[in-house]
Structure formats: structure tokens, C-alpha cells
Length: 394
Ligand SMILES: [Zn+2]
Image (cartoon, rainbow, N blue to C red):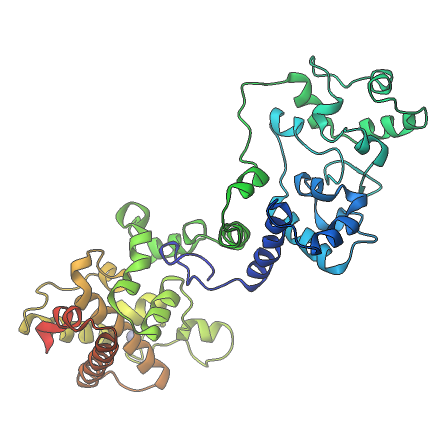
């Protein structure tokens, strides 16, 4: 549902990601050198033990961070930031640029570490403790350069010990040719407004593309064709938004494509209905395809529509099952698509109300839809577009 329309979603707002994106906007304010608000002092005072703005270069999961002494507001922001920034580096250059401190990939006893003395001496990233040949600097070398005291000896070995074996292997190979992965931080500082791109990144983890689900295969199986080759899904997802302003038809087609309509065979399976049999023909089990395409009563209904469209010179051919299910991909077919989608909605409504299908009632409801669309078009000053669409029937 959070997906874009052309990816088969409803573009609904994912509230959790939206709130996180708003919190992340505070990171931008902290990093903005032009902003010298007094509130920044609170941030600096609160985050001293995790390196102040260095924290935004770190790769951590919120729950791994040592948050004692950090107030709830900044803790929330750091947690939101970790959802945006955290990733698993696998390339040489990315590992070299990993922070040594506040890094969820370098933990002791399940918590990230921060050696304040090392940090104050400027040892911040993996590359700061590496030699050119891909091995780690020895303690003596580090001691000499940074005048670390003898007490840092155990810290040095603990740090090397908790470094991932896989990282050590990649660092040894030292593949300089490999490009870095897209760095969330580097990208972030180029954003002028951060909320939208951050929201898009956060929400992407909750979005599931229809093509990666088995719905597409189920439709292919029902219709006995390979839909992946036959139709462009992105276009078929969008059609309903081009052709009508009516929300109930848009939502209906969304549910239809995602196979989220309750047919009798489904209601029977979950114990709500006494029988899986179709309430129109009263002969066969009512599957999704049966209800909208193969039922004898439904086929008669589609024939009536086709004959009516032929009489009005709107469309001369018989609808295929594919046309009925997913509409026509061309932008010139707005009226026919509206009729097909509304007819399906009408079938489902009639089934739900347990009435008989009436072609006359359908045309009356379609006329009402036309009037509703006219009022919307009138308010938007788009009467000409409306007339162009409905001309053959008014
Ligand atoms: Zn039937």
C-alpha cells in the first residue's frame, strides 16, 4: 500500500517512516554550519561521549549504542538516523572508511565501543589503524605516533579481536579497484531538503513489489498466459488513476489486481459461507476468474455491454479476459477502461448484495458516475476533458 501507484501501491503514507524522516531533518540542522542556534549546545553537551557530530559518520543500530546520559529527544533522532544510515559494508573501501567507534559491526559484549582516549587522538576510522600492506598497525607503532599510554594495550587487542574475520580477509586482499557503495551520509549532505528522500529510503524497506510476490504467477495460471511477457505491469497499475477520479473504483481495481476480493470459494474455505457455489449461476465454485469472467451469467452481462458499446460506436470488439482483468494499456481508451472497471465493481457489489445482475441498473449507475465526474471536472475547470471522454455516451 505504501508503494508508488505504478508499482502497484496506493502511495499511502507510512506513518512510522514519516516520523523518522522528520526526526532525521534535525541531523541536517545539526550539521548546518549556518545554523548557530543555542539549542545546538544541548546537543553537543548530550553527545560528548559518542563523539558529537562524529556519531553521524558511524554505522550503528540504535539498540547497540551506549545511550546513557543522552536525552530522549536526541536518542530518538539517533535511532531514526540509524534506520537511515545503517548498512553492512562488504567492499574494501567501505570497510576502510568504517568508524571504529559506535559501530554495530565492532562490538564487545553486545555493545558498540568508544575509546575516548583514542578518539581524542584522532583515531576514528578503520583506515587509521591500517598499514599500506593491509595489515593492522602494531600497538608499538600506534603508541609511538599517538603517545598512547601502556593502559591502551588491552584495549588495542580487544579492538582487533572483535573485528570481523570477513573484514580482516577483505582488508588483506585490498581491492582498490572496487568502487565504494553509495554512502548514505555522503548522499545525505547533498540533499537540500532531507525529509522526502529520507522518507523514500525508509519506506522502501516496507514496500513489496507485486512482481516479487506470487500474485503475478497466480494471474498467469488463471488466465493460462505468461503475463510477464504479455503486459507491462507498471502501465496496468496506473491505468485506473488515469481513467477515473472515483475513489471506490480505484480502490476496487487495486484490490482486484492484488486478489484481495472475497469470492464465495474463499468465504467457504474460511468458514464464513455454507457453500463455495457462485450466487449468479448457482452451478460452479466461485473463484475470482469465475466471478468476473467465466460464469455464464457474467458472460451474458459482458455480451450485453459489448452489444451496447457496438450500438453506440464506442468499441466494436468483444472483451478478452485480459481486457476485463487489467483494462486497456492505451491512453486513448479512457471511456472503455472506465466502463470495464465500473462493470467489475458493479458485479462485485451485486454479488455482495446477493441480487441479480441487471444491465439496465448498470447503465443507470454509469450515468450517475458520469454526472459525478462532470461535477468534479466542472470544479477543476476541465469540462472539455470530461466531454471528450464521455462524448459517445452523452
Ligand atoms: Zn457463476
